[in-house]
Amino acid sequence: MLPRAFTAVIERNVTFDGAFTTEPYETAWAGDARWFVHVLDATPGAEIEFGAQVSPESLTWCDHESRKATIKGKGMASIAVDLPGPWQRLSGTVRNGSVKVIMYLSLRG
Image 1 (cartoon, rainbow, N blue to C red):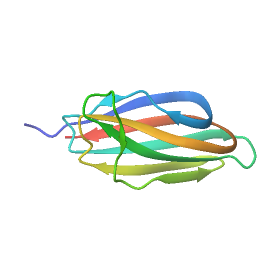
Image 2: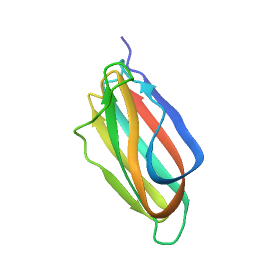
Image 3: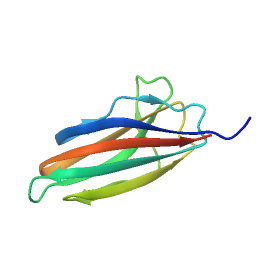
Image 4: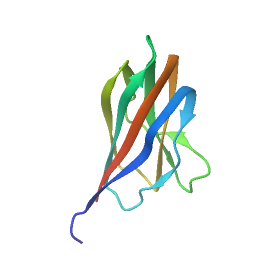
């Protein structure tokens, strides 16, 4: 099979405060994945911490063993996910305010 790649916009111009999870995305065909979180706007002092979660069937979830990332204020960060499994989502927490984000999931097979 030829290698393939795909990038999905998971959240666009969404504001989060407190704990959150994204909608699940099927990734069974992918050998690796990368999440990008771009904070477009943030209240003063706000920070977002996020990490990948995996699921065998998109109903029950556990944290992926990849690292978590944190963004303070505006900016962008990403995390690499090796062997992403059948389903992926992002979970995290916004502290000290709110953030407006765009979240991308890039997949390679």
